[in-house]
Length: 128
Image 1: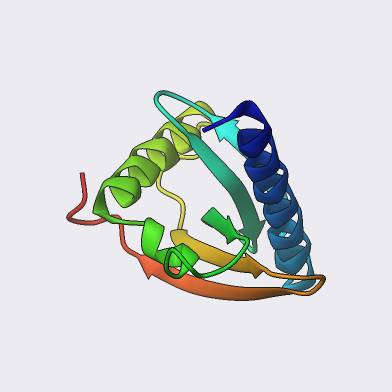
Image 2: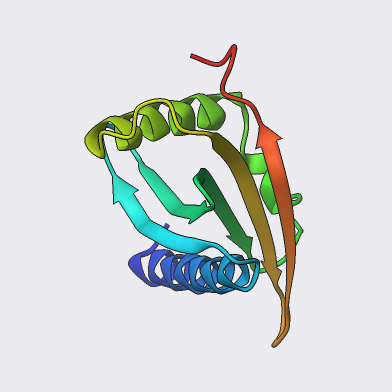
């Protein structure tokens, strides 16, 4: 992959994360963290509403020629997100707070994006 193509992909991903954060705010969430890094990876968004923490994986594509964006959140990615969420909670001394794992899939083709919000897309139990 050339640097130019990688840069375009990163810009698209950032636009998707910005749209996802905006969407969550409209749903009444407070964005607590964006691109939180810990251990071996990154959590795109951490949102909070009434004591519930939501760890959000955002997948943005310029089209669906390679499949739906949410299909990229496979078991390996889910396990990574669960480990990162536990590290996040520990770093904030939050203990055993209610949590959820969401996936926001965005297809940005043309001017208008199409956003799909998968609430409780997967559960932590049984993954790691």
